[in-house]
Length: 400
View 1: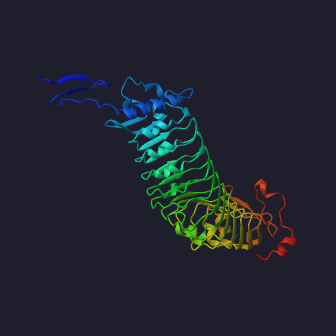
View 2: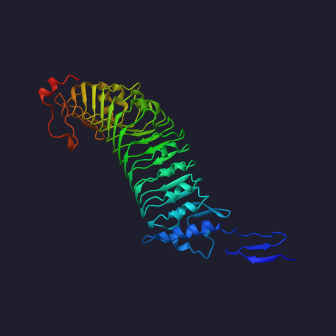
View 3: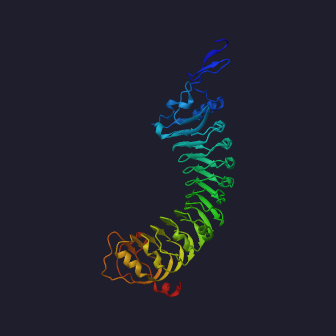
């Protein structure tokens, strides 16, 4: 054999050293990755009932640890608290040593009680494509340096206690597909997103404010939720561009201006625009086939379009609609094609329905507090109040 020697490796592999290399059963994990995993382990603990870290025995190969995935001698994915490993969550902090895992492409952490801020060192993970740390107790601001992760496709930091603005640098990441930052305490404006592959943007339940540029989002967006913020200004030009939307929730904001009729032709199953300051008439360009449309608690006016009669759950209450309820609504209501038709608290003057007509048990109709006596008595939600008819003085003063 000459000067060839057989040396046992750390992880029970064997290497023949000398003039030739004969066998390599296991590659030795990169020392930097090994030390990084040790630091990560020291900063986190299993919550009661969790046994995620049971397999993390550093006398064996870390590439066999629960939630650790390797390619050759580098860690490429880290799923901390992977439910498949029997974890019910982790507690502790995220150690900055995570940034030393130079080949990491995926980092996820299951719901738990991880506290503290996101390490700035995450920006060193240039190949990171997936970052998901949701339903924990992260605090502090989102590091602006995350904008350096130019390969990032998914960013999910939802259901934490993050504060401060959404860094504008996040919006410049060229391949972003999913941005989920809902249920935090983020403030400031919504940055413009330049990625032409962005499909999901979920920022609901924060404290965001300001107006949205007509070009703030690319036409590729399919899921958009900005509900429960303090956003303002018109959105008609923006919505006219987002023709691939299949979910839209802008409720509980202060948006103004009109609602473009084109929105009602998008492939949306649930349209939530309630509790804003939208005003003016609403004129769909075609028959509306959206399952649920909620335009309640706005300042919409004019007559109700008969094109809404094909909506299964329609909330137009607490607006300024005038005139007669279209006959097509009555037909579909009596045929049980409409399940919810809330028209209360408007200025409607009539509806052509036989007082003896029986509303199907599966349908709900509310007409109270309009400029007419409801011809049929049907149960209304408690928040509609007890007054059946709007005061005559209000009806005579309101001209639509």
